[in-house]
Amino acid sequence: MTTGDPTEKFAALEVGALPDAPLDAAEAFYAEYLADTRDMLEDGSLELLVIQLPPAGKDHDDWRRSLARDLARKYAPTRVNVIAATPDTNAQMLAYLMDAPGVTGQYCPTDD
Image 1 (cartoon, helix red, strand yellow):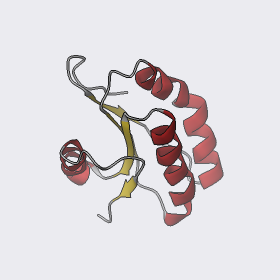
Image 2 (cartoon, one colour):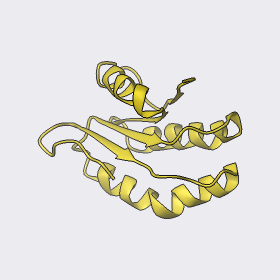
Image 3 (cartoon, one colour):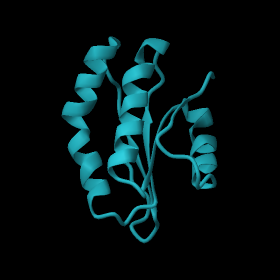
């Protein structure tokens, strides 16, 4: 897990490898990372949490969109977004989301 500076209002949760099958990947995320995610959001001190997932096929899109949407709704006004990017585009996606105050509840995969 990687988080931003505690004095900042931004944090990123970096998720390691997940199983290839979408149902197994969703189960692994919820089992291994959901409690940490909620802990990061509970006190309301963050303005933005970005969950960084490894790239995956289109068959993973539904559970990832649901994750972003449901967390953003529950923890509003904190913005929550989920990205799936390679290391080459990860920093660009984070920079974009930090500079986009109206973007929340989105799953943002890259095509690289």
